[in-house]
Image (cartoon, rainbow, N blue to C red; front, side, top):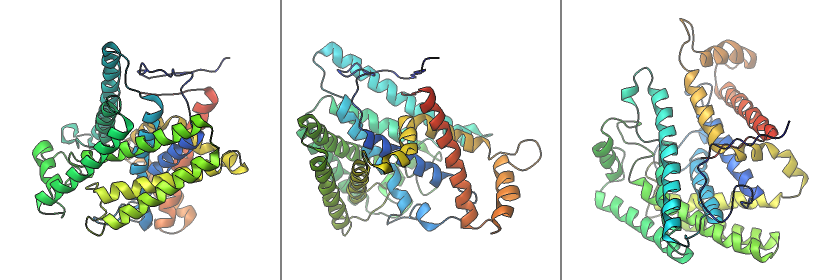
Length: 380
């Protein structure tokens, strides 16, 4: 049988078609790493016993878990730079805009589906913001900017957004949970439909700096695309990405002296620091091209080929198995407490909690491998 290419994609009418669209293996690998990390962090066996690096910072500061979502945002921006161009005519602009809006709407709807599943059996109590919702809104705004501006203008817009976000936080008068401007705005917009009474880490105000993060990724993507087009060598491209990443990390740390690192607020310092970290991750992924390690890490590329499908299905499944089936334990709890914990023998401590998350990740890596083997690509 021939290979199946199943595309749930509303294709953007761009110069590069689905068949000829340029791909960067290192970017797929980094995207797969972020998806793997999301699954690992979101699915511990016991939420009360998790190794500290796999939990988000309580407020100011950053843990390893806090770098995952920003990396995905940076990758989204870099991917935009490879496929989005200013349209040649007004008719083409309208078609591109419609495709961008459709894609954003699909992401938002999928995010709301996950939130309804999490709130079940009380769907009207759902949380309105969420990871996919932020991805959708961020993609919408950033993509519309990219198809209307030059790379230089995009960099200027990113700087203005970061400065505006900082200014609004200062005008708000507090960076504390529940009383900061972002939390107050979220309560005004969404009422009680938030992650907690203190606000929401994917709230409305943080969209400004999140769009800026995307545009920083777009800028790096433009530069990298020019390097590849000029055929200046992998070493030159890798050195440029690494130098930019190091500079961004240093700038983010310096900025944090005045504006704390904070994922929930998505502060400018956090945006710049995590962008730099993502670029250093990309450097590592570029470094292993055509080495034995590339084949060893092939599962990351499988995850990176279908990131949305794997993330959405893994989250939906995790929500489905957390509810009791019949009158017994929820399937998730039955597997963890009745099977895994006795095998590990640690009474549900962080070790067995991590092993459960790794097993769940392995399951979805297998699904990604099957999709890769069958040639299935799911795009929105």
